[in-house]
Image (cartoon, rainbow, N blue to C red; front, side):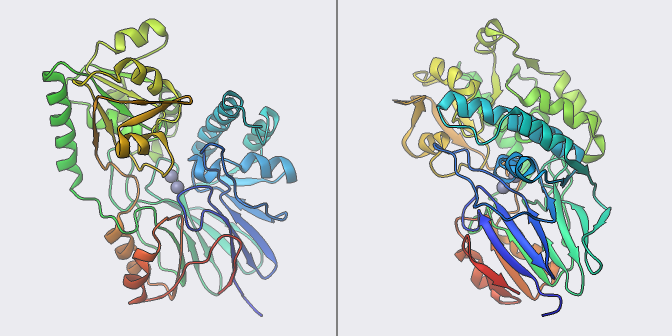
Length: 414
Ligand SMILES: [Zn+2]
Ligand SMILES: [Zn+2]
């Protein structure tokens, strides 16, 4: 058959984690993302055969987590933005550390991580790359985090792989726009859930909430991903006047962001915001931070990182508040906190007396936005991925396209 497109998810088709998609067109094999789920134990996508080209949408571990495995196994080259490659490098090093700490065998070593970095072929939005005589890949900003990409394959039929994307501007990155295509392969992290409020309203509510916590003599602790969410929070709180401390890998990540200002909405705003906060460098700093107004720290889902040592000190303090701002994957510590007001401190589960709040500062398109985006891409066929609730999107999307929800391992000829 001429110009066939064959898809196979190796992971992450029906959950928010371990994403990987293999595409085969006229015998050219392409791999999009190769992630992991940092659960206990971590989970991975199925193994692909050797591929001709590999593309990485962004650095979050559910997309990039296992790229060192493929890069070292096949000496595979990998296309991503330079920013994505630098941040993935930090996250990969950290995963080796975490695996060792938790007693899981790391699936790659430092040499593999270094090789992955050197195997990167840097690409950027608005540029393209030829796959074979009939197909090329064009790169578009995904608006999800700085340096994130969507991949458009142009041939007799156009195919779009969204990775994670956002169609609303945040303080940190500008939103993306729909791209006309015949086949749309779209993430659905927020399928079935709309972002409840306008961003500005939500930002004001967050500041009010923190003020309330400070007024009653408590401390606001904001667990946040080191990559992107913590910088977004620093930007939101830039003019609040709060005494803010920042602990974790987010500092290094911020320095990398500032090296690539073209992926930021405003380099100046980020620089100014970072200049107004304090960074924890030592145990002494950690003690001082506990006397401040706000601590922003990793990990976002509270499965490790400095946030647990702060929570160990604060867990019985009814005046303090844990403010979650991201998507809480099933089985994570922050989900346990939201659902049961308990936290797992490295194997010991304890009650938490602090008040727990959730603000939806997502970097993903919400339910209605996913539908709006899909409609404006005007595809004949939509393949849904990276969602634990794809069912919620089927009916509204069937109004204007054929919708497919293949499971991991299933082969889909389009
Ligand atoms: Zn992401
Ligand atoms: Zn994702």
